[in-house]
Length: 319
Image 1 (cartoon, rainbow, N blue to C red):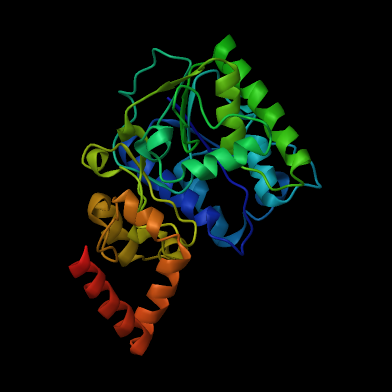
Image 2 (cartoon, rainbow, N blue to C red):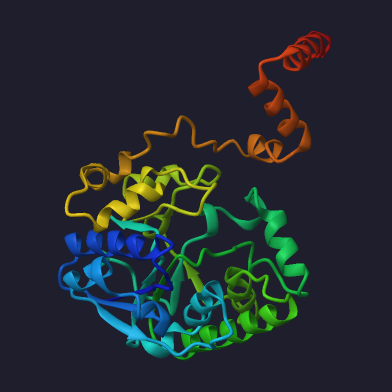
């Protein structure tokens, strides 16, 4: 089986470390998989000293030519939207902020491209529906197809005319949006527009293949049987213990007991999380100015929150 990652990194970030962790967990359950790491020349040049750990896991480093003018984010997206050009015909793509919990050999292949719904829910149910719509409408596009908006963090690809057409259109639309929006682009927006224009080239697969651990998505039904935990290490949106930069950086050290503890039971590594907050009304309310000001007042522990609280009690009695 062919497994692909994309890594654009410098020693100043933790993307290399995240990749090592994901590949390390993959090797534990799939020792014979063909692993490809797609990089640009600048990233490959940093593979010295401690940043040679990936070599230990028998990976194929594939260097892709990217426009020099692109920043690192756009270099990553340039490769991602055209990755089928640099990989074997059939492959699985996985984001680097992941933990592989079980072999992927049993994944269905009766489709051209298989992906999991973003946040494990239909577009109309999503707490970020407005975000999808805003990104798409700014380009005159659509936020999904058949009430589905797919997450680009995991793709099972069977090489075919249809999958090739999806990548070709995705790459064109991503580049179009990058030029129109002066660099402020989201590759997932162009992916879902490409899927719309191709009348649903992407097939929905079970959430266990890309269990998205987030504070406002329906990940709970999939955690127990998850093959891949997508832990979202972007600052401010994570919920999993491995998202901590100091934990990620420790993988390059000779010993990393905290990391080992997490990886020994990754489906229980939520020590800093009291509530995944899957109540979407609460999620929406938390974005309002009223909530933000109330939170500030609560943290201050002063008279303002006490006044808010007293008024709430009065309103509760009246209602």
